[in-house]
Length: 149
Image (cartoon, rainbow, N blue to C red):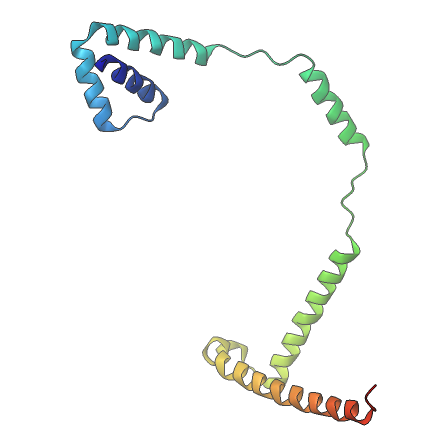
């Protein structure tokens, strides 16, 4: 019964999953048990021969790979920029330009930007919120002039 436990440890060791403690226990057992020692030698030899045995390629694999390579060479490239990509790139450039202009009109010193970015951002946010509030109130005044449906 004890040998079954060590045969499992032999497989764990061959798979690289055995701990150092398990390897020490296995070595101690193999020193005293000729059956398990022979089992380890046979299993190790079998695993080594399986590792060294080349596997044949499935039939038709080479022809299939060659056909796919030829098909890829014939097909025109489908990597054309889409409208979405162009719009995204264009809007990103516009946003970056607006940000640079905003920093320019706020008088941001780019050399000291990391030091005073909080001050500039808080100024921008307060100005933006005042502008947004006045725009919304003007919109509300226009909306209030229409009779309710």
